[in-house]
Image (cartoon, rainbow, N blue to C red; front, top):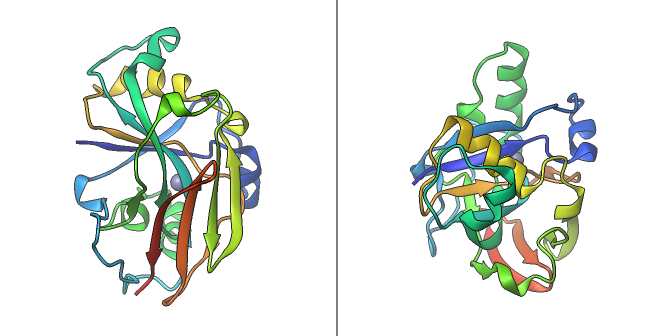
Length: 203
Ligand code: ZN
């Protein structure tokens, strides 16, 4: 199982981190060990002093493929949920300054939170799926798939030019603006449309 993540897929978020808007999807990976398994506590990592949440729509790949045509890409995923791409922002800032790879900031153990899968058919339109993140009960991030710079289908087509997609792979499709810090004791809850799909406490 592979975990793909899209960087800078919402223009307001790219701006808040002073990043240029990409002309092609920015893709990075997390290893399988990054996935926070259900009923596993999440501990604040000791290597960062600036842990950021990034709430994202996550797709579940349901069909193997390579060199997928954008027009056919919607056949390759069947489930959707909300997850968190946890980021050690201080570590990332240092790595970015030196143009070094991001793994130490983004690919560490338990850095990928995953909500409960929802059938994609439930969503009124794949092109307009709302999601949000609450921090201690207050909404801090709100996004809609229609604000993405690169659509689900474009992202799948792009990834599959470089990497084979396999059943069970995950795609974190990027975070909207509003990313921010969280500390020990904070509770984060993710919503897909009106359904709560996860709740975790930082320990
Ligand atoms: Zn992200």
